[in-house]
Each structure stands twice: as C-alpha cells, then as structure tokens.
Image (cartoon, rainbow, N blue to C red):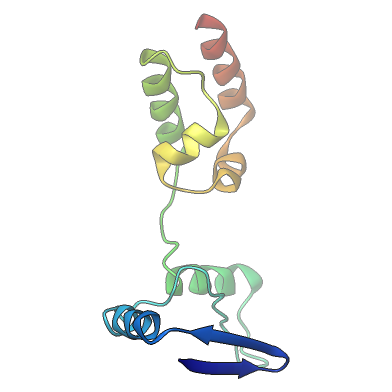
Amino acid sequence: MNVFCASFISLYISDDLLTKIVYEVSMLDLEEPPKNNLRKVIFKYGNMLCKEEKLRIVGELIGRTKKFHQGDIYDIMLMLNHGGWKITIERLARGLDCSTRTVHRNMTEELKREKELLNKQI
C-alpha cells in the first residue's frame, strides 16, 4: 500500500488503484487542458488595448469564438415549437451548444415576445 500525505490529510491507495490512476493519466491528451481549470491571460501593463479588444483576444484563446445571431435563436425556437416542446432558455442553450447566459445576452425583446407567443400555442 502507498501512503500520500498532504498537510493533515492521509490517503491510503491500493496498488491496483494506483496503477489504474497512473494508466488513465498517461492516456490523457496533455495538449488539451482539463475542462474545469481556469485559464488566465495576462496582458502587459500599458499595452494600449481597450477592454473589448482584450476580451476578444481572450475569447479567441480559450476557444469561445462562436457568434450567435437572433436568427439562430429564432430557428431553434421554431424547431422546438414544431417538435411540441416548450421553449426555455436552457433548451435554446442546448440547441445552440452554448451557455444560458449567452442566450440571455443575445435575446432581444422581440425574441422574448415571440417565445411567449410560441409557448402559448403549445
């Protein structure tokens, strides 16, 4: 048995489990960062970029380059309505493969009214 200590916590791991963990870690693609770790982009002080330019650069670096338009949201709304599903922000986000916050950010008042009308038809 192997014993690992981190400050005041002791963890006992069997040899079989340790071998399995080492194998699984060795099979990971190390070029792709884990999904749950934060990424930080640090800009040099005085680089003269405005906030929007910095956010655009950060978005490109961490892979958030998708842009959604009102037409994309409306198309998903129509698909949900034709399928007999109630239109929710969560379902729209799943259909667009984005976060619910992104859908909220891109929903106009006209789309919100249309969503309510389509939901009343069901």
